[in-house]
Image 1: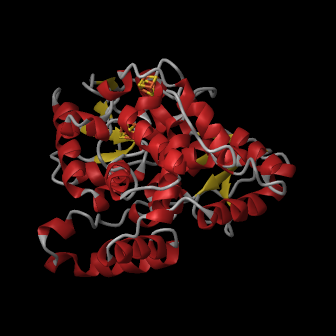
Image 2: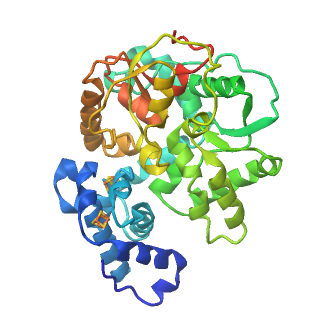
Image 3: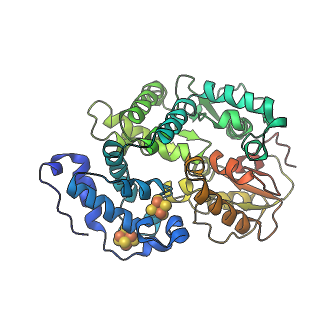
Length: 406
Ligand code: SF4
Ligand code: SF4
């Protein structure tokens, strides 16, 4: 795609990188075919090619418009388009700059500003979110059905091992995951312990920064990232093998620290090292001998591979392989590359699109009547378990030595 950016604008490293990314686009439109929002609306402006074109126009005019805001708000950041693109266009990099311009140039209505502020104040702070969820659970019996669905019952972590293995990895607890479903981190810690790995959180570390980054890319998100790097660095220097998050959405955000902080002279090198250490649990377990894990009853399951795992980490088929290796029956899932509509806060901010994508996903997942749906991201789990005839859980729970599953 041809670009005509102002020379002075191009002196900004971020703009120069986006210019390179946009120029790679050959207009083929393959990305539109796998874009969930283009599939829903059929509008070129709701597809990746159209969004790239609109961002290019905004950069050339050095001004974003309300139309650009509307179509970027509708983007799920699922990165399905990146997996499809034959030219290797780094769409999410282009999108980041587009969102920065929108936030700079296009004021939002008061209601939207309030909602964004509430989400950014509550969700990244585990104690605030836990308190709100506790209240929601207490009020659950009298909540309307639409709200009740969003307040899952408590699932505690269960007993945690106290062993200190020579092999050590850092665990990111996640800001909402532990309150919504404590059994995920519990299962992760027990499975890793069983394999001779101490997986421990660093208490001072906080939100990965993804929520701030998606709603308003800028210093607030980068400061969360810098804070986590400072918290983890002593353990990294002492030889921590990897940094792991139970939610693939958080994991893929950590893997992006190197790119997002590459222009920060103080943090660039450490951010790159942190990104290199980030692994999804599936990538780690694929390298371990799992035959020592307690034998479980074989289950017929459907695996929903989150976009952050398949398009972000580029991990496909790994979880299925692990589960099959342990004797479980994996049913095929049509359109498995398409987002379920959860996408962080997307299901709250774009409820109509999110609900349509959820219904499509559930119908594909349930086609072969599995007894369980498994996922790798807490956001997808909560989104999919609403009105669902079978339980939706994190796949690691099928490996948990003390799990209720068989
Ligand atoms: S990130 Fe997802 S929703 Fe956004 S343009 Fe790409 S495929 Fe479409
Ligand atoms: S698939 Fe890649 S090259 Fe083709 S239109 Fe989309 S972004 Fe451009």
